[in-house]
Amino acid sequence: MGDWMTTLFWAIAGYLLGSLSSAVMVCRLFGLPDPRTLGSRNPGATNVYRIGGKVPAALTFLGDALKGFLPVAMARAASADEITLLFAGLAAFLGHLYPLFFGFKGGKGVATAFGVLLAWQWVLGLILLAIWIAVFLLFRISSLSALTAALIAPLVADLLQGPSRMTLSVTTISLLLIWRHRENIGRLLRGEER
Image (cartoon, rainbow, N blue to C red; front, side, top):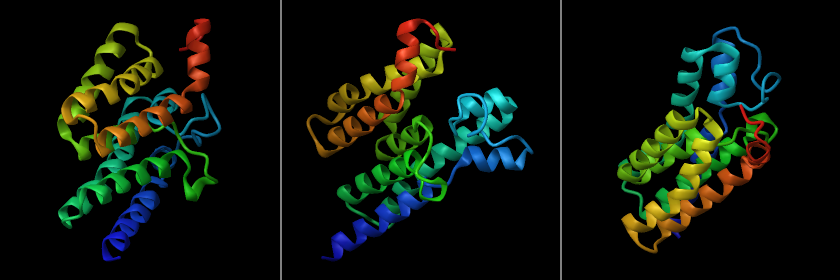
């Protein structure tokens, strides 16, 4: 029973931390418009870049990645088991997608997913970051980079871990990322994506 209470505690902590919107907070800090009202209306680093440039976008990415990384890292520091680490990360990711503090309307989750994956297994996180960067340098389309990394992530996790709870959790995040990018997929297929 104690193990489940610990898991529940870290899942709730992860979700609440994930529910903080780095994009909204950074835009307020820089005196920029609310990112949910301009551009793609997505509270993420790419939209903040359109609105305010490189520095606010970089801070948004860092904030979103940290809120995925920290719950897992803190749970690990508290000697939590693997199940707890997985739930803490998944909850942080869901908090970003469906934030309690912002009417359950959040971002697409790319940076937060990166933070979670980096905390779960740093090699996996760095491989997927390298894939994202490579695709972006080739095509200069953020959503295509994210979708490519999301599609490849379960395969990389399986190569590193084999069939495991980790691989299942990575697959869950990948499927949610793809779902959140469904409008981008339509624009990519029509050749309209920026």
